Image (cartoon, rainbow, N blue to C red; front, side, top):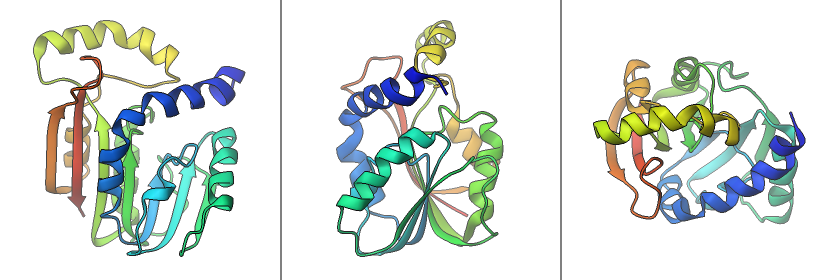
Length: 204
């Protein structure tokens, strides 16, 4: 990874995603049991887990981000164990049916081969387990979608692989998830090209 990807972009990402934090916190509060967080990043979500959680396992492909996340873990007083490790969402190093909840927040925009990651999340969830998600996605409005497609190649380079043209809802459906509830909306505090959001809970 480059210096920009390791040291500069993580701080930019933390600042840029603050606008979503209250909504993400409420959503993550629904996770229960043994939890797998995909793309743990710098640990921004680790304070949102509630007493219904027995363990959190966070994976992240960028080791430099996990170093910061570990300082969050070390300074927090979690009542449950938190384990962080470098990992690839497309090939999860966990057994089938081994988690009660999987959390994916603002991460599916950057995963190469996201179909593989969606299938892997479903594989490691127990029957009836839930996927808690909050993702920015491609717009349903054709004019916005055209501009997203135009800007995406430049944005992808600036944002370390982030795509603004992903149809993540369809990805989850194709992987076999059933939506328990889903909110599809445009965030009022975000520029139009990044404003389309899906959030909710899907069940295996």
